[in-house]
Length: 125
Ligand code: AMP
Image (cartoon, rainbow, N blue to C red):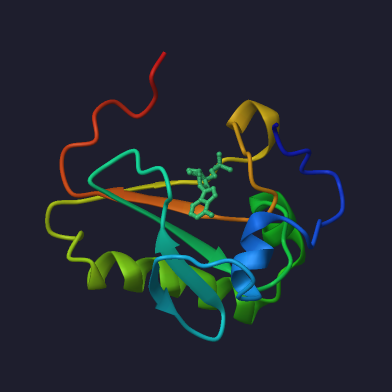
Protein backbone atom coordinates (compact mmCIF):
# COMPACT_ATOMS: atom_id res chain seq x y z
CA UNK A 1 0.00 0.00 0.00
CA UNK A 2 1.22 3.50 -0.85
CA UNK A 3 2.30 5.93 1.82
CA UNK A 4 0.19 9.01 2.54
CA UNK A 5 2.94 11.56 3.16
CA UNK A 6 0.50 13.89 4.94
CA UNK A 7 -0.13 11.33 7.75
CA UNK A 8 1.83 11.46 11.04
CA UNK A 9 4.88 9.23 11.45
CA UNK A 10 4.03 5.60 12.24
CA UNK A 11 6.66 4.29 14.67
CA UNK A 12 5.69 0.68 13.81
CA UNK A 13 6.93 0.93 10.20
CA UNK A 14 9.55 -1.59 9.13
CA UNK A 15 12.46 0.86 8.98
CA UNK A 16 11.65 2.16 12.48
CA UNK A 17 11.88 -1.47 13.64
CA UNK A 18 15.23 -1.85 11.87
CA UNK A 19 16.50 1.33 13.55
CA UNK A 20 15.43 -0.02 16.96
CA UNK A 21 17.15 -3.34 16.23
CA UNK A 22 13.86 -5.25 16.41
CA UNK A 23 14.39 -6.75 12.98
CA UNK A 24 17.72 -7.34 11.24
CA UNK A 25 19.17 -5.61 8.22
CA UNK A 26 22.22 -6.17 6.06
CA UNK A 27 24.05 -3.08 7.26
CA UNK A 28 26.43 -1.12 5.04
CA UNK A 29 27.06 1.99 7.13
CA UNK A 30 25.88 3.74 10.27
CA UNK A 31 26.67 7.04 11.94
CA UNK A 32 24.99 9.47 14.32
CA UNK A 33 22.47 10.61 11.71
CA UNK A 34 21.91 7.76 9.29
CA UNK A 35 21.78 4.03 8.63
CA UNK A 36 22.43 2.37 5.26
CA UNK A 37 21.57 -1.24 4.41
CA UNK A 38 21.05 -3.45 1.37
CA UNK A 39 17.54 -3.48 -0.08
CA UNK A 40 15.87 -6.83 0.58
CA UNK A 41 14.62 -6.97 -3.05
CA UNK A 42 17.44 -5.43 -5.11
CA UNK A 43 16.57 -3.76 -8.41
CA UNK A 44 20.22 -3.33 -9.51
CA UNK A 45 23.59 -5.00 -8.85
CA UNK A 46 24.01 -2.53 -5.99
CA UNK A 47 20.81 -1.37 -4.29
CA UNK A 48 21.29 0.27 -0.93
CA UNK A 49 18.80 2.22 1.17
CA UNK A 50 19.97 5.15 3.24
CA UNK A 51 17.66 6.38 5.98
CA UNK A 52 17.87 9.17 8.54
CA UNK A 53 17.64 8.15 12.20
CA UNK A 54 14.95 10.75 12.91
CA UNK A 55 11.23 10.11 12.56
CA UNK A 56 10.46 11.47 9.08
CA UNK A 57 7.76 10.04 6.82
CA UNK A 58 9.20 11.25 3.55
CA UNK A 59 11.43 13.72 1.76
CA UNK A 60 8.59 16.23 2.11
CA UNK A 61 8.51 15.86 5.90
CA UNK A 62 12.31 15.82 6.21
CA UNK A 63 12.97 18.84 3.99
CA UNK A 64 10.35 20.85 5.90
CA UNK A 65 11.09 19.83 9.50
CA UNK A 66 14.58 18.36 9.92
CA UNK A 67 17.31 20.46 11.48
CA UNK A 68 20.22 21.71 9.41
CA UNK A 69 22.44 19.17 11.23
CA UNK A 70 20.13 16.27 10.42
CA UNK A 71 19.94 17.30 6.77
CA UNK A 72 23.70 17.74 6.49
CA UNK A 73 24.33 14.45 8.30
CA UNK A 74 21.97 12.54 6.04
CA UNK A 75 23.20 14.05 2.78
CA UNK A 76 26.82 13.43 3.78
CA UNK A 77 26.00 9.82 4.66
CA UNK A 78 24.51 9.19 1.21
CA UNK A 79 27.63 10.57 -0.46
CA UNK A 80 29.90 8.65 1.91
CA UNK A 81 28.16 5.34 1.21
CA UNK A 82 28.42 5.87 -2.56
CA UNK A 83 32.16 6.60 -2.27
CA UNK A 84 32.76 3.73 0.16
CA UNK A 85 30.98 1.32 -2.20
CA UNK A 86 33.22 2.45 -5.08
CA UNK A 87 30.30 3.80 -7.10
CA UNK A 88 31.59 7.26 -7.99
CA UNK A 89 33.90 6.51 -10.92
CA UNK A 90 31.31 4.58 -12.95
CA UNK A 91 28.39 6.54 -11.56
CA UNK A 92 25.22 5.77 -9.69
CA UNK A 93 21.60 6.86 -9.27
CA UNK A 94 19.68 8.23 -6.29
CA UNK A 95 15.92 7.84 -6.02
CA UNK A 96 13.50 9.09 -3.42
CA UNK A 97 9.86 8.06 -3.72
CA UNK A 98 7.25 10.29 -2.10
CA UNK A 99 3.62 9.27 -1.67
CA UNK A 100 1.28 7.48 -4.06
CA UNK A 101 2.48 8.85 -7.38
CA UNK A 102 6.07 8.24 -6.32
CA UNK A 103 5.29 4.63 -5.35
CA UNK A 104 6.50 5.04 -1.75
CA UNK A 105 5.73 1.91 0.28
CA UNK A 106 7.62 2.42 3.53
CA UNK A 107 6.62 5.50 5.55
CA UNK A 108 10.12 6.38 6.77
CA UNK A 109 12.27 8.55 4.49
CA UNK A 110 14.74 6.51 2.46
CA UNK A 111 16.95 7.23 -0.50
CA UNK A 112 17.58 4.37 -2.91
CA UNK A 113 21.20 4.20 -4.08
CA UNK A 114 21.61 2.17 -7.28
CA UNK A 115 24.83 1.23 -9.04
CA UNK A 116 27.11 -1.55 -10.15
CA UNK A 117 26.31 -1.25 -13.87
CA UNK A 118 24.38 0.79 -16.43
CA UNK A 119 20.99 1.64 -14.96
CA UNK A 120 19.00 2.23 -18.11
CA UNK A 121 16.51 5.01 -18.72
CA UNK A 122 15.55 7.18 -15.79
CA UNK A 123 11.90 6.08 -15.83
CA UNK A 124 10.12 3.12 -17.42
CA UNK A 125 7.11 4.57 -19.25
P1 AMP B 1 9.73 2.51 -1.58
O1 AMP B 1 8.82 1.94 -2.61
O2 AMP B 1 10.54 3.68 -2.08
O3 AMP B 1 9.01 2.83 -0.28
O4 AMP B 1 10.82 1.41 -1.30
C1 AMP B 1 10.80 0.55 -0.19
C2 AMP B 1 11.96 -0.39 -0.34
O5 AMP B 1 12.18 -1.03 0.88
C3 AMP B 1 11.73 -1.49 -1.39
O6 AMP B 1 12.76 -1.42 -2.38
C4 AMP B 1 11.81 -2.78 -0.57
O7 AMP B 1 12.41 -3.84 -1.26
C5 AMP B 1 12.62 -2.34 0.63
N1 AMP B 1 12.43 -3.10 1.86
C6 AMP B 1 11.25 -3.42 2.44
N2 AMP B 1 11.47 -4.10 3.57
C7 AMP B 1 12.82 -4.19 3.72
C8 AMP B 1 13.67 -4.78 4.69
N3 AMP B 1 13.18 -5.40 5.78
N4 AMP B 1 15.01 -4.69 4.51
C9 AMP B 1 15.51 -4.08 3.43
N5 AMP B 1 14.76 -3.49 2.47
C10 AMP B 1 13.43 -3.56 2.62
